[in-house]
Image (tube, rainbow, N blue to C red; front, side):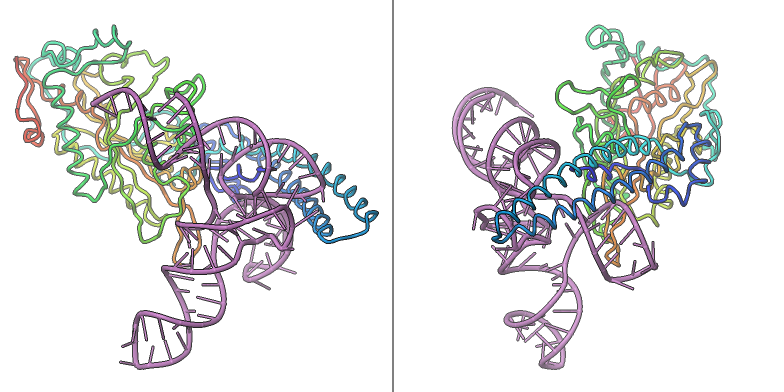
Length: 434
RNA sequence: GGAGAGAUGUCCGAGUGGUCGAAGGAGACGGACUCGAAAUCCGUUGUACCGUCUGACGGUACCGAGGGUUCGAAUCCCUCUCUCUCCGCCA
């Protein structure tokens, strides 16, 4: 019965499936994904045909029922009832056939990724991302620098061992000045966002599975990075992007209210299943961290410009922290299904790898209408036409990774660590020393 | 956690199984009146999908969600979710 309710669950505009077929096929290939577009088109046609047949039958049923409103001879009535019963069976059969086709159609259609920006570099691996800008030079030391794990231990700032005993691997206690540093970073970022017109929020750390799916996360299954909470239909959020995107789910927004800029401070939980490896130690990849996230709802015509603005804010934040970084334009294979274009900031981390490396600290994506379609977030334009909004997200500061960058870049030969000037007012101290 | 009440369009709110996509009111929009405004009067005012000569149109679905009964369900039955009130617990 309620089949067409599910048709909302789509990502790209499926009405464009046939008209943009070549483009979609090329995009799937550029992203290194496997989606058989022609099978989906065939299913779409089947679905449409079955729908028409079903609807015609329903029209006849309605007509038949309407004829029985008044009084009539019992013979006539008995005849109409018999016809109605026959129709009912036909409809049920047709509906279940339709449901079958529809299920497969939608399941496959959901795997089609968003279109990609024409300027996004084409490539499969993150090593094919394009460096578009570099700020500052990698920090040089007149001594052998330590990594943040050593620094955190010697200065009694981070305790991984106890956290492993209490909570498991990839958890940590922040201690002493590191606690103040976390809070200072949060406040520093929030103050900048407030000046840039964002509404500040602290979001729930738990969200419903539908919302996770709408944003494009996969709440279930082996490969899922998400912690599901048994028996509740909810999950621990992987990022406030989820709760900020869910904020206006199923709403029709007013054009004059756009763009809506939200920032969210939340904990972020990642299972990182099977994520052990070279960079598994330390704060870089952990099960729980705090993050200040930016999220924007806007008109389609605004999204590219706002994407640049989000990147500019991220750069402002890291320049204020005096941390050398570069910006990469993420290649098609590394975009993920919802993103149309994505920029990452990778900060210089002296303790990473042999001689220091850049490591991702922020990421900002323009998801165009892809998430909005799933979350059913629309706006009414001047002509009264209802259209999907564009959604963008970006990291203001992921605290754990920012701490990695600060500890490693600001370390001194005597083992103490200086602090970025911009943070001192929030910290109440300008170095960490034992 | 226990007990009870409820969920209808942008909002409030009515709705004996057929005449209900849904009364009435508010709001919004358009128009009349006015120098202008208020008041008054008239009209318009949901979304999605399928089809189409893509234009106005035709059809189907939607009264919290899912299922059932019936020739026919906003209306009857079952399940779930959410909201409110009271009690308990608690930061």
